[in-house]
Amino acid sequence: MSAEIAYLQESHSQLDELQQLFCAQRQAYAANPMPPAAQRQQWLKSLLELLSNERQALIEAISQDFSHRSADETLLAELMPSLHGIHYARKHLKGWMKPSRRKVGLAFQPASAKVVYQPLGVIGVIVPWNYPLYLAMGPLVGALAAGNRVMLKLSESTPATGRLLKQLLARVFPEDLVCVVLGEAEVGMAFSKLRFDHLLFTGATSIGKHVMRAAAENLTPVTLELGGKSPAIVSSDVPLKDAAERIAFGKTLNAGQTCVAPDYVLVPEERIGAFVEAYRQAVRGFFPTLADNPDYTAIINQRQVARLNSYLSDATSKGALLIPLFDQGQERRMGHSLLLNVSDDMTVMQDEIFGPILPIVPYQTLDQAFAYINQRPRPLALYYFGYNKAEQNRVLEHTHSGGVCLNDTLLHVAQDDLPFGGIGPSGMGHYHGHEGFLTFSKAKGVLIKQRLNAARLIYPPYGKSIQKLIQKMFVR
Image (cartoon, rainbow, N blue to C red):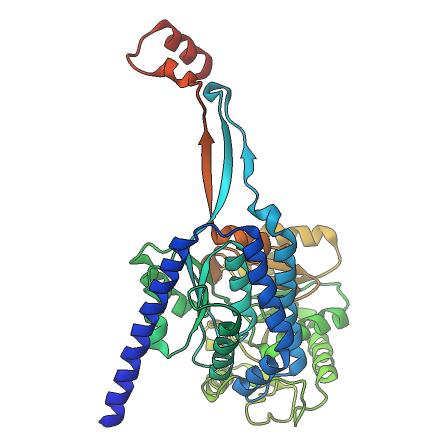
Protein backbone atom coordinates (compact mmCIF):
# COMPACT_ATOMS: atom_id res chain seq x y z
CA MET A 1 0.00 0.00 0.00
CA SER A 2 2.84 2.39 0.84
CA ALA A 3 4.30 1.87 -2.64
CA GLU A 4 0.93 2.73 -4.18
CA ILE A 5 0.68 5.90 -2.07
CA ALA A 6 4.22 6.90 -3.06
CA TYR A 7 3.33 6.38 -6.72
CA LEU A 8 0.21 8.54 -6.40
CA GLN A 9 2.15 11.26 -4.61
CA GLU A 10 4.82 11.25 -7.33
CA SER A 11 2.15 11.38 -10.01
CA HIS A 12 0.44 14.39 -8.39
CA SER A 13 3.80 16.09 -8.04
CA GLN A 14 4.53 15.57 -11.75
CA LEU A 15 1.16 16.99 -12.74
CA ASP A 16 1.66 20.02 -10.49
CA GLU A 17 5.10 20.60 -11.99
CA LEU A 18 3.62 20.28 -15.49
CA GLN A 19 1.07 23.02 -14.78
CA GLN A 20 3.76 25.26 -13.26
CA LEU A 21 6.00 24.88 -16.32
CA PHE A 22 3.11 25.73 -18.62
CA CYS A 23 2.20 28.85 -16.63
CA ALA A 24 5.85 29.99 -16.59
CA GLN A 25 6.05 29.66 -20.37
CA ARG A 26 2.76 31.54 -20.78
CA GLN A 27 4.09 34.42 -18.68
CA ALA A 28 7.42 34.48 -20.52
CA TYR A 29 5.64 34.64 -23.87
CA ALA A 30 3.45 37.51 -22.69
CA ALA A 31 6.59 39.42 -21.67
CA ASN A 32 8.26 38.89 -25.07
CA PRO A 33 5.57 38.14 -27.69
CA MET A 34 7.64 38.98 -30.79
CA PRO A 35 11.30 37.97 -30.31
CA PRO A 36 13.57 39.65 -32.89
CA ALA A 37 15.47 37.66 -35.50
CA ALA A 38 18.78 38.04 -33.63
CA GLN A 39 17.34 36.41 -30.52
CA ARG A 40 15.86 33.51 -32.49
CA GLN A 41 19.16 33.05 -34.32
CA GLN A 42 20.92 32.80 -30.98
CA TRP A 43 18.46 30.17 -29.76
CA LEU A 44 19.09 28.09 -32.87
CA LYS A 45 22.85 28.56 -32.64
CA SER A 46 22.83 27.38 -29.02
CA LEU A 47 20.85 24.30 -30.01
CA LEU A 48 23.20 23.58 -32.91
CA GLU A 49 26.30 23.79 -30.71
CA LEU A 50 24.68 21.64 -28.02
CA LEU A 51 23.82 18.81 -30.41
CA SER A 52 27.24 18.98 -32.08
CA ASN A 53 29.11 18.89 -28.78
CA GLU A 54 27.00 16.18 -27.16
CA ARG A 55 26.56 13.81 -30.08
CA GLN A 56 28.36 10.93 -28.40
CA ALA A 57 26.31 11.20 -25.23
CA LEU A 58 23.13 11.25 -27.29
CA ILE A 59 24.21 8.21 -29.32
CA GLU A 60 24.90 6.28 -26.12
CA ALA A 61 21.63 7.26 -24.43
CA ILE A 62 19.53 6.25 -27.44
CA SER A 63 21.41 2.96 -27.72
CA GLN A 64 20.80 2.29 -24.02
CA ASP A 65 17.06 2.74 -24.52
CA PHE A 66 17.01 0.32 -27.47
CA SER A 67 19.37 -2.13 -25.73
CA HIS A 68 21.34 -1.53 -28.93
CA ARG A 69 20.89 1.15 -31.59
CA SER A 70 23.42 1.37 -34.41
CA ALA A 71 25.59 4.45 -33.79
CA ASP A 72 25.73 5.08 -37.53
CA GLU A 73 21.94 4.99 -37.80
CA THR A 74 21.64 7.53 -34.99
CA LEU A 75 24.14 9.77 -36.76
CA LEU A 76 22.43 9.32 -40.13
CA ALA A 77 18.76 9.42 -39.13
CA GLU A 78 18.73 11.60 -35.99
CA LEU A 79 21.75 13.89 -35.67
CA MET A 80 22.38 14.70 -39.32
CA PRO A 81 18.82 15.80 -40.22
CA SER A 82 18.53 17.68 -36.90
CA LEU A 83 21.71 19.65 -37.57
CA HIS A 84 20.80 20.25 -41.22
CA GLY A 85 17.36 21.48 -40.16
CA ILE A 86 18.91 24.03 -37.81
CA HIS A 87 21.34 25.25 -40.48
CA TYR A 88 18.49 25.61 -42.95
CA ALA A 89 16.29 27.53 -40.52
CA ARG A 90 19.11 29.92 -39.58
CA LYS A 91 19.89 30.59 -43.24
CA HIS A 92 16.30 31.43 -44.16
CA LEU A 93 14.93 32.87 -40.91
CA LYS A 94 15.06 36.57 -41.82
CA GLY A 95 13.29 35.93 -45.10
CA TRP A 96 10.59 33.88 -43.39
CA MET A 97 10.00 36.59 -40.77
CA LYS A 98 9.71 39.40 -43.31
CA PRO A 99 6.08 40.52 -43.77
CA SER A 100 4.77 39.63 -47.20
CA ARG A 101 3.10 42.39 -49.20
CA ARG A 102 -0.38 41.72 -50.59
CA LYS A 103 -2.54 43.56 -53.09
CA VAL A 104 -5.47 45.81 -52.24
CA GLY A 105 -8.33 46.00 -54.72
CA LEU A 106 -9.03 49.25 -56.55
CA ALA A 107 -12.34 49.65 -54.75
CA PHE A 108 -10.55 49.87 -51.38
CA GLN A 109 -7.79 52.32 -52.26
CA PRO A 110 -5.89 54.17 -50.95
CA ALA A 111 -4.58 51.43 -48.64
CA SER A 112 -1.87 48.81 -48.37
CA ALA A 113 -1.91 45.24 -47.08
CA LYS A 114 0.58 42.78 -45.68
CA VAL A 115 0.81 39.50 -43.82
CA VAL A 116 2.71 39.55 -40.54
CA TYR A 117 4.03 36.25 -39.13
CA GLN A 118 3.50 36.27 -35.39
CA PRO A 119 4.55 33.59 -32.85
CA LEU A 120 1.61 31.54 -31.63
CA GLY A 121 2.79 31.38 -28.02
CA VAL A 122 3.41 28.09 -26.19
CA ILE A 123 3.84 24.97 -28.33
CA GLY A 124 3.44 21.42 -27.05
CA VAL A 125 5.32 18.57 -28.74
CA ILE A 126 4.65 14.90 -27.94
CA VAL A 127 7.69 12.88 -29.03
CA PRO A 128 7.57 9.14 -29.90
CA TRP A 129 10.16 6.55 -28.95
CA ASN A 130 11.39 5.47 -32.38
CA TYR A 131 13.45 8.60 -33.18
CA PRO A 132 13.47 10.40 -29.83
CA LEU A 133 16.04 13.01 -30.87
CA TYR A 134 15.04 13.91 -34.43
CA LEU A 135 11.30 13.92 -33.70
CA ALA A 136 11.94 16.29 -30.79
CA MET A 137 14.39 18.55 -32.61
CA GLY A 138 12.41 18.93 -35.85
CA PRO A 139 9.37 20.56 -34.21
CA LEU A 140 11.59 22.41 -31.72
CA VAL A 141 13.56 24.07 -34.52
CA GLY A 142 10.40 25.19 -36.34
CA ALA A 143 8.79 26.48 -33.14
CA LEU A 144 11.88 28.42 -32.02
CA ALA A 145 12.39 29.88 -35.50
CA ALA A 146 8.80 31.14 -35.30
CA GLY A 147 9.55 32.74 -31.91
CA ASN A 148 7.60 30.43 -29.59
CA ARG A 149 8.08 28.79 -26.20
CA VAL A 150 8.20 24.98 -26.36
CA MET A 151 7.37 22.08 -24.06
CA LEU A 152 8.59 18.63 -25.15
CA LYS A 153 6.96 15.47 -23.75
CA LEU A 154 9.43 12.60 -24.22
CA SER A 155 8.28 9.00 -24.41
CA GLU A 156 8.35 6.82 -21.31
CA SER A 157 9.88 4.12 -23.56
CA THR A 158 13.10 6.14 -23.95
CA PRO A 159 13.91 7.15 -20.35
CA ALA A 160 17.69 7.52 -20.81
CA THR A 161 17.26 9.81 -23.81
CA GLY A 162 14.55 11.79 -22.01
CA ARG A 163 16.70 12.36 -18.93
CA LEU A 164 19.70 13.37 -21.04
CA LEU A 165 17.72 15.79 -23.23
CA LYS A 166 16.15 17.35 -20.14
CA GLN A 167 19.60 17.90 -18.66
CA LEU A 168 21.22 19.16 -21.88
CA LEU A 169 18.47 21.56 -22.94
CA ALA A 170 18.38 23.03 -19.42
CA ARG A 171 22.01 24.01 -19.95
CA VAL A 172 21.25 26.37 -22.82
CA PHE A 173 17.57 27.32 -22.38
CA PRO A 174 15.61 28.53 -19.36
CA GLU A 175 12.59 26.37 -18.57
CA ASP A 176 10.26 29.20 -19.54
CA LEU A 177 11.65 28.96 -23.10
CA VAL A 178 12.26 25.23 -23.65
CA CYS A 179 11.58 22.41 -21.22
CA VAL A 180 11.40 18.61 -21.29
CA VAL A 181 8.58 16.79 -19.54
CA LEU A 182 9.05 13.17 -18.45
CA GLY A 183 6.52 10.71 -17.10
CA GLU A 184 4.19 7.83 -17.86
CA ALA A 185 0.95 7.75 -19.86
CA GLU A 186 -1.08 9.80 -17.36
CA VAL A 187 1.43 12.65 -17.65
CA GLY A 188 1.18 12.43 -21.43
CA MET A 189 -2.61 12.68 -21.28
CA ALA A 190 -2.43 15.66 -18.91
CA PHE A 191 0.10 17.24 -21.27
CA SER A 192 -2.29 16.94 -24.22
CA LYS A 193 -5.03 18.64 -22.18
CA LEU A 194 -3.02 21.83 -21.56
CA ARG A 195 -4.20 24.98 -23.33
CA PHE A 196 -1.36 25.07 -25.84
CA ASP A 197 -1.44 27.46 -28.76
CA HIS A 198 -0.49 24.51 -30.96
CA LEU A 199 0.08 20.82 -30.22
CA LEU A 200 2.16 18.50 -32.41
CA PHE A 201 1.90 14.75 -31.87
CA THR A 202 3.89 12.03 -33.59
CA GLY A 203 2.87 8.45 -32.94
CA ALA A 204 0.26 5.77 -33.46
CA THR A 205 -3.07 6.60 -35.10
CA SER A 206 -4.98 5.10 -32.16
CA ILE A 207 -3.19 7.42 -29.68
CA GLY A 208 -3.51 10.36 -32.07
CA LYS A 209 -7.30 10.14 -31.79
CA HIS A 210 -7.08 10.52 -27.99
CA VAL A 211 -4.66 13.45 -28.32
CA MET A 212 -6.92 15.22 -30.80
CA ARG A 213 -9.96 14.62 -28.59
CA ALA A 214 -8.16 16.12 -25.59
CA ALA A 215 -6.96 19.11 -27.62
CA ALA A 216 -10.47 19.69 -28.95
CA GLU A 217 -11.67 20.55 -25.43
CA ASN A 218 -9.49 23.68 -25.64
CA LEU A 219 -9.86 24.18 -29.42
CA THR A 220 -6.10 23.71 -29.59
CA PRO A 221 -4.89 23.41 -33.19
CA VAL A 222 -3.06 20.13 -33.79
CA THR A 223 -0.51 18.72 -36.18
CA LEU A 224 -0.67 14.92 -36.21
CA GLU A 225 2.05 12.70 -37.72
CA LEU A 226 0.55 9.22 -37.55
CA GLY A 227 2.26 6.85 -39.97
CA GLY A 228 0.16 4.03 -41.34
CA LYS A 229 0.79 1.34 -43.92
CA SER A 230 3.09 2.96 -46.49
CA PRO A 231 3.25 0.90 -49.72
CA ALA A 232 6.09 0.37 -52.16
CA ILE A 233 5.30 -0.48 -55.78
CA VAL A 234 7.79 -2.38 -57.93
CA SER A 235 7.14 -1.80 -61.63
CA SER A 236 7.15 -4.46 -64.32
CA ASP A 237 10.49 -3.41 -65.78
CA VAL A 238 12.64 -1.80 -63.07
CA PRO A 239 15.89 -3.72 -62.38
CA LEU A 240 15.04 -5.77 -59.30
CA LYS A 241 18.45 -5.23 -57.73
CA ASP A 242 17.83 -1.47 -57.72
CA ALA A 243 14.36 -1.73 -56.20
CA ALA A 244 15.21 -4.45 -53.67
CA GLU A 245 18.29 -2.67 -52.36
CA ARG A 246 16.52 0.66 -51.84
CA ILE A 247 13.44 -0.91 -50.28
CA ALA A 248 15.67 -3.00 -48.01
CA PHE A 249 17.46 0.13 -46.81
CA GLY A 250 14.17 1.81 -45.97
CA LYS A 251 12.82 -1.27 -44.22
CA THR A 252 15.92 -2.25 -42.23
CA LEU A 253 16.88 1.22 -40.98
CA ASN A 254 16.15 1.27 -37.25
CA ALA A 255 14.93 -2.35 -37.68
CA GLY A 256 11.84 -1.06 -39.49
CA GLN A 257 10.76 1.12 -36.55
CA THR A 258 10.19 4.13 -38.79
CA CYS A 259 6.86 5.83 -39.50
CA VAL A 260 7.69 6.11 -43.23
CA ALA A 261 9.22 2.64 -43.59
CA PRO A 262 7.82 0.58 -46.49
CA ASP A 263 5.07 -1.39 -44.77
CA TYR A 264 4.34 -3.76 -47.66
CA VAL A 265 5.48 -4.07 -51.26
CA LEU A 266 3.36 -4.61 -54.38
CA VAL A 267 5.24 -6.73 -56.93
CA PRO A 268 4.13 -7.98 -60.37
CA GLU A 269 2.98 -11.56 -59.87
CA GLU A 270 5.51 -13.02 -62.29
CA ARG A 271 8.43 -11.19 -60.59
CA ILE A 272 7.79 -12.22 -56.97
CA GLY A 273 10.28 -15.10 -56.87
CA ALA A 274 13.05 -12.99 -58.38
CA PHE A 275 12.23 -10.07 -56.06
CA VAL A 276 12.41 -12.31 -52.97
CA GLU A 277 15.90 -13.45 -53.99
CA ALA A 278 17.07 -9.91 -54.81
CA TYR A 279 15.69 -8.66 -51.49
CA ARG A 280 17.33 -11.49 -49.56
CA GLN A 281 20.69 -10.67 -51.14
CA ALA A 282 20.29 -6.97 -50.37
CA VAL A 283 19.46 -7.52 -46.69
CA ARG A 284 22.20 -10.12 -46.21
CA GLY A 285 24.61 -7.78 -47.95
CA PHE A 286 23.79 -5.08 -45.39
CA PHE A 287 23.87 -7.49 -42.43
CA PRO A 288 25.86 -10.70 -43.06
CA THR A 289 25.04 -11.74 -39.48
CA LEU A 290 22.92 -10.53 -36.58
CA ALA A 291 25.06 -11.88 -33.77
CA ASP A 292 26.87 -8.94 -32.15
CA ASN A 293 26.53 -6.92 -35.36
CA PRO A 294 26.88 -3.23 -34.34
CA ASP A 295 25.02 -2.12 -37.47
CA TYR A 296 21.75 -3.91 -36.65
CA THR A 297 19.37 -2.11 -34.31
CA ALA A 298 17.26 -3.86 -31.68
CA ILE A 299 13.51 -3.62 -31.13
CA ILE A 300 12.78 -0.96 -28.50
CA ASN A 301 11.36 -3.31 -25.83
CA GLN A 302 10.04 -6.79 -25.18
CA ARG A 303 6.42 -5.66 -25.56
CA GLN A 304 7.10 -4.62 -29.16
CA VAL A 305 8.91 -7.92 -29.82
CA ALA A 306 5.86 -9.81 -28.59
CA ARG A 307 3.58 -7.69 -30.79
CA LEU A 308 5.67 -8.41 -33.90
CA ASN A 309 5.86 -12.14 -33.14
CA SER A 310 2.09 -12.19 -32.74
CA TYR A 311 1.77 -10.75 -36.26
CA LEU A 312 3.89 -13.60 -37.62
CA SER A 313 1.97 -16.27 -35.69
CA ASP A 314 -1.38 -14.87 -36.80
CA ALA A 315 -0.29 -14.64 -40.45
CA THR A 316 1.16 -18.15 -40.66
CA SER A 317 -1.89 -19.62 -38.92
CA LYS A 318 -4.03 -18.08 -41.67
CA GLY A 319 -1.98 -19.41 -44.55
CA ALA A 320 0.88 -16.93 -45.07
CA LEU A 321 4.29 -18.25 -46.12
CA LEU A 322 7.03 -17.00 -43.79
CA ILE A 323 10.50 -16.52 -45.33
CA PRO A 324 13.04 -15.71 -42.61
CA LEU A 325 16.18 -14.02 -43.94
CA PHE A 326 18.27 -15.06 -40.92
CA ASP A 327 18.48 -18.34 -39.04
CA GLN A 328 17.40 -16.67 -35.81
CA GLY A 329 17.42 -13.36 -34.01
CA GLN A 330 19.54 -12.37 -31.02
CA GLU A 331 17.57 -11.24 -27.95
CA ARG A 332 15.78 -8.07 -29.14
CA ARG A 333 17.67 -8.01 -32.44
CA MET A 334 14.78 -9.56 -34.33
CA GLY A 335 15.56 -11.29 -37.62
CA HIS A 336 14.15 -9.80 -40.81
CA SER A 337 11.32 -11.75 -42.50
CA LEU A 338 9.24 -11.72 -45.68
CA LEU A 339 5.61 -12.83 -45.87
CA LEU A 340 3.91 -14.24 -48.99
CA ASN A 341 0.27 -15.23 -49.55
CA VAL A 342 -0.98 -12.52 -47.19
CA SER A 343 -4.67 -11.58 -46.91
CA ASP A 344 -6.70 -8.78 -45.41
CA ASP A 345 -7.87 -10.85 -42.45
CA MET A 346 -4.30 -11.02 -41.10
CA THR A 347 -3.35 -8.51 -38.40
CA VAL A 348 -0.09 -7.79 -40.19
CA MET A 349 -2.10 -6.38 -43.11
CA GLN A 350 -4.36 -4.29 -40.86
CA ASP A 351 -1.97 -2.59 -38.42
CA GLU A 352 1.16 -0.58 -39.10
CA ILE A 353 3.97 -3.14 -38.76
CA PHE A 354 6.77 -0.95 -37.34
CA GLY A 355 9.35 -3.71 -37.42
CA PRO A 356 11.44 -6.03 -39.64
CA ILE A 357 8.55 -7.81 -41.39
CA LEU A 358 7.76 -7.14 -45.06
CA PRO A 359 4.61 -8.60 -46.66
CA ILE A 360 4.67 -8.99 -50.46
CA VAL A 361 1.42 -8.50 -52.37
CA PRO A 362 1.13 -9.60 -56.02
CA TYR A 363 -0.50 -7.48 -58.71
CA GLN A 364 -1.09 -7.88 -62.43
CA THR A 365 -1.57 -4.32 -63.72
CA LEU A 366 -0.56 -0.92 -62.37
CA ASP A 367 -4.24 0.05 -62.17
CA GLN A 368 -4.80 -2.98 -59.95
CA ALA A 369 -1.98 -1.80 -57.67
CA PHE A 370 -3.53 1.67 -57.50
CA ALA A 371 -6.91 0.18 -56.62
CA TYR A 372 -5.36 -1.91 -53.82
CA ILE A 373 -3.75 1.19 -52.28
CA ASN A 374 -6.73 3.48 -52.76
CA GLN A 375 -9.14 1.04 -51.09
CA ARG A 376 -7.16 1.43 -47.87
CA PRO A 377 -6.49 4.36 -45.50
CA ARG A 378 -4.22 6.97 -47.04
CA PRO A 379 -0.60 6.33 -46.02
CA LEU A 380 2.09 8.71 -44.78
CA ALA A 381 4.46 7.74 -47.61
CA LEU A 382 4.36 5.94 -50.94
CA TYR A 383 7.30 4.56 -52.91
CA TYR A 384 7.40 3.71 -56.60
CA PHE A 385 10.24 1.94 -58.39
CA GLY A 386 10.33 2.36 -62.14
CA TYR A 387 12.18 4.66 -64.53
CA ASN A 388 9.33 5.29 -66.99
CA LYS A 389 8.35 8.95 -66.45
CA ALA A 390 4.83 8.51 -67.78
CA GLU A 391 4.22 5.77 -65.22
CA GLN A 392 5.78 7.91 -62.49
CA ASN A 393 3.26 10.65 -63.29
CA ARG A 394 0.41 8.12 -63.21
CA VAL A 395 1.48 7.11 -59.71
CA LEU A 396 1.47 10.74 -58.55
CA GLU A 397 -1.92 11.42 -60.12
CA HIS A 398 -3.75 8.22 -59.12
CA THR A 399 -2.67 7.77 -55.49
CA HIS A 400 -2.85 9.84 -52.31
CA SER A 401 -0.20 9.87 -49.58
CA GLY A 402 1.54 12.30 -47.27
CA GLY A 403 4.72 12.22 -49.38
CA VAL A 404 6.28 10.26 -52.23
CA CYS A 405 9.71 8.97 -53.21
CA LEU A 406 10.24 7.85 -56.77
CA ASN A 407 12.99 5.20 -56.86
CA ASP A 408 13.98 5.64 -53.23
CA THR A 409 12.65 5.34 -49.69
CA LEU A 410 12.65 7.56 -46.59
CA LEU A 411 14.92 10.30 -47.91
CA HIS A 412 12.16 12.75 -48.79
CA VAL A 413 11.76 13.28 -45.03
CA ALA A 414 15.30 14.68 -44.77
CA GLN A 415 14.77 17.35 -47.45
CA ASP A 416 14.50 20.62 -45.55
CA ASP A 417 12.73 22.40 -48.41
CA LEU A 418 9.92 19.82 -48.60
CA PRO A 419 6.90 19.85 -46.26
CA PHE A 420 6.40 16.72 -44.19
CA GLY A 421 2.97 15.57 -43.08
CA GLY A 422 0.26 12.98 -43.46
CA ILE A 423 -3.22 12.95 -44.95
CA GLY A 424 -6.37 11.64 -43.29
CA PRO A 425 -5.60 8.58 -41.13
CA SER A 426 -1.84 9.20 -41.55
CA GLY A 427 -2.08 12.67 -40.06
CA MET A 428 -2.83 16.32 -40.68
CA GLY A 429 -0.76 19.46 -41.04
CA HIS A 430 2.84 19.93 -42.14
CA TYR A 431 6.17 20.95 -40.71
CA HIS A 432 9.90 20.97 -41.62
CA GLY A 433 11.62 23.98 -43.15
CA HIS A 434 9.41 26.89 -44.16
CA GLU A 435 6.24 24.87 -43.52
CA GLY A 436 7.40 24.37 -39.92
CA PHE A 437 7.81 28.12 -39.48
CA LEU A 438 4.33 28.68 -40.92
CA THR A 439 2.74 25.94 -38.78
CA PHE A 440 4.00 27.59 -35.60
CA SER A 441 3.18 31.14 -36.71
CA LYS A 442 -0.04 33.08 -37.08
CA ALA A 443 -0.14 34.55 -40.59
CA LYS A 444 -1.96 37.72 -39.62
CA GLY A 445 -3.53 39.77 -42.39
CA VAL A 446 -3.13 43.53 -41.90
CA LEU A 447 -4.88 46.30 -43.88
CA ILE A 448 -3.34 49.76 -43.47
CA LYS A 449 -5.02 53.11 -44.14
CA GLN A 450 -3.85 56.59 -43.30
CA ARG A 451 -5.63 59.97 -43.23
CA LEU A 452 -7.43 59.82 -46.56
CA ASN A 453 -10.58 57.69 -46.20
CA ALA A 454 -12.26 57.04 -49.54
CA ALA A 455 -14.50 54.48 -47.83
CA ARG A 456 -16.59 57.39 -46.49
CA LEU A 457 -18.24 57.39 -49.90
CA ILE A 458 -20.07 54.16 -49.08
CA TYR A 459 -21.15 55.08 -45.55
CA PRO A 460 -24.92 55.45 -44.85
CA PRO A 461 -27.32 56.92 -45.57
CA TYR A 462 -27.55 54.77 -48.71
CA GLY A 463 -29.02 55.67 -52.10
CA LYS A 464 -26.71 58.58 -52.97
CA SER A 465 -25.64 58.99 -56.59
CA ILE A 466 -21.98 58.27 -55.84
CA GLN A 467 -22.97 55.00 -54.15
CA LYS A 468 -25.01 53.95 -57.15
CA LEU A 469 -22.03 54.69 -59.39
CA ILE A 470 -19.71 52.67 -57.12
CA GLN A 471 -22.15 49.76 -57.16
CA LYS A 472 -22.36 49.90 -60.94
CA MET A 473 -18.54 49.91 -61.24
CA PHE A 474 -17.64 47.25 -58.69
CA VAL A 475 -20.66 45.00 -58.03
CA ARG A 476 -20.37 42.92 -61.16
